[in-house]
Length: 324
Ligand SMILES: O=C(O)C1CCN(c2ccc(-c3cc(CO)ccc3Cl)cn2)CC1
Image 1 (cartoon, protein in one colour):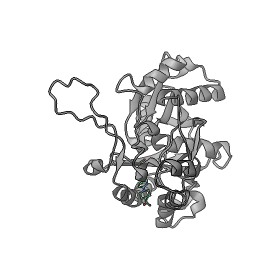
Image 2 (cartoon, helix red, strand yellow):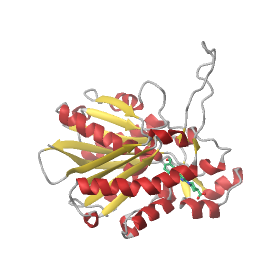
Image 3 (cartoon, rainbow, N blue to C red):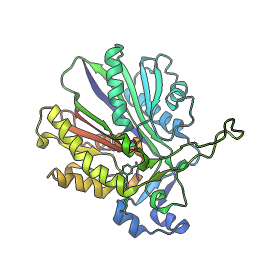
């Protein structure tokens, strides 16, 4: 049995903050942000937390598919900005949409979260004889950023993207191969939300929540080194040639990184779509948002072979080769 990507959808909050808006509140410029990242604007959530962004995507997917919500067997939300330690954002979504027959939980793999979630859902659906699943990448990064740190605050945005998947006997559409890798020795390079306290019986819980921090140069070089390797491992495992991949959907962390990966693989940049200009870096939401935009625009068609890669906090990297 094979996992088939059935429907895609995405949602970004209405408030759009342009680079010039940020230049009003911190020492940065549209020119610097555009040149160094490719970002022109980002969506910022004022009232919708991570579960609400994810719930909108879930409702859009149920609308688009016509599926009965009670036919869902599993819901996984990939996020590094959950509503809370508990309940899981996925469980909140399950309650919001009334998917009473679905088990629901979160996974935490930062910008590779959607990629890792796809593998977890595929394995659990095959093992537990599930039929239908919902995977959502959802982030409220604006709530965990240090808005005084211009080196990171300008890079991120809020949003959610999701996919309805179905286990099917058909051979036409499936995950051809998966490559997942974690380098925990470099985990300190990208952190957020660490709660430190030295008190034995702390009186003020939660302790001082630590905002997002990143060793940009280290993460940047990790990405340009590890992403091409992950793609090559996945292509080899799929027993196809690199040239047979129609599109490479890379985590939208930085436009220059995406171009550098294309160059390293000696492939045409047209095969590496970029929408970071519109959304900024939305971490776990970035791959499913890009995937939906390419399906909706008709650039990705049934029968095509796509590579979808995530990379970031952990540090983690992962690639699926999917025959769509
Ligand atoms: O050019 C410059 O000076 C700077 C150099 C540093 N840059 C970076 C560095 C790392 C990331 C990044 C972030 C995540 C987190 O989701 C995941 C994956 C990556 Cl590769 C994004 N930008 C921005 C431009």
